[in-house]
Length: 326
Ligand SMILES: Cc1ncc(C[n+]2csc(CCOP(=O)(O)OP(=O)(O)O)c2C)c(N)n1
Ligand SMILES: [Mg+2]
Image 1 (cartoon, rainbow, N blue to C red):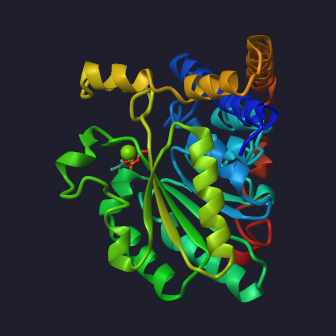
Image 2 (image 1 turned 60 degrees about the horizontal axis):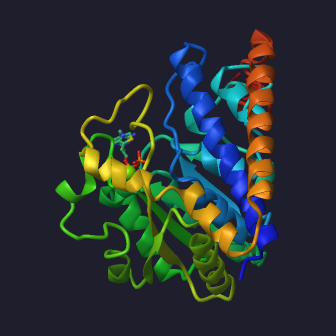
């Protein structure tokens, strides 16, 4: 069971993510973010709870809605915001942008814009871990929309057949872009209801409760490390912003939005902290630290230089340059 001090750390991480996403939204609207953004405000508890249950050397794969996973795996708000703003100090030197945040040194093996494409990659990483006997687990985070993509089914099947140490974590926010997943899927739980067809246990968790997510991922990761094979966790959640950019998400019923905003991951964690005897002052101090970190990150990213054009061909090919092609 998590202690008050441990949960306060998770709360602060979620508070940092929430504020980073708000900053990304504001920077986008003021024209400082190049390309698009897909914000994960509302999804914080999934990334933070899962990361808290994983080993530092485990592998994580995320989607284009992946800021929360990069931050939960140790990327800083400054690195992430600088990446969104195409600055030299960005997490990927401005070569990735919002949709491709990657921090390989922290096992964050990328954010992928092709829906479903990274699930087979996570299976490959799990296979590699198995062959090397490292005890590592690979985790693929993906949206509900990916469950209607062929790669989801291929990945689950192969992972089960080879009993690989991979966890499939579906962030079910009820929508795939502007379409309700329920309108195009015959089962109620698009991920969890299908997992048993591949011989994989499919569980559902409240994805807005960081403690429940941590407990579930901890249990499923132990199982995978012990050689008992893959598992699927469907985490119910809701995005606070639209799908991308400035989408006002007018296709979502007002009553639904209101209900989910009342089920906010930060509020839920605050309630649990209170129950564990953590003072309102301690929670307020965590909020203030989070605000200060993100404010500083925004200023630093704004002040950072653009990348040197001479860097354009570095980190592109395995040899670090373009010589491979010549
Ligand atoms: C293979 C593929 N088809 C279509 C798209 C366009 N597209 C981008 S995001 C998206 C919706 C995905 O929804 P979901 O998987 O639920 O993730 P969410 O955005 O809700 O996090 C679609 C269809 C794409 N990027 N890749
Ligand atoms: Mg979705």
